[in-house]
Length: 194
Image (cartoon, rainbow, N blue to C red):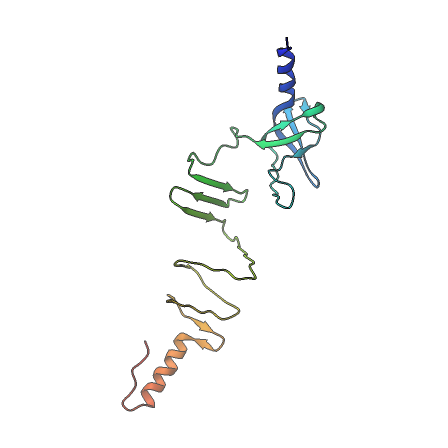
């Protein structure tokens, strides 16, 4: 007959929850506090993937985690984070994938409404590098200025609520030059450009 009490004790020692107490970034390791008088050895990070496809997302001090502690814990691994009173879940919808960042940035996709929302904190910048080009299908609306170091072309309407300019002048100044020429050099005067 198997010793169920002993097996239960082994399982309780193998999987334990605690709170990240220290973080070492290189190599990525954690000391996890299990109780006031018990802290782990340096534990490894349990990545979802760790080869050519890999991620980097360290746990933070104070984050509650689940640990696997084989062999007394010297080869232990922090498997995943779990919610706690200090750090609660960010959504209650099964239609939402959401990622919150420490600076307040939020990446959220709602598969029910097919809505992707990326909210960055004030002053944040976005850089996209795609030397092969970027193709957008659909209407694009921009609140703010647009600048380009090379040409801009459009196969459909390109409109602006403010002035449009290039290296030789603005649309407004070109319109003024044309209208002045059209009025003074044509008889009868050519129609003005609005």
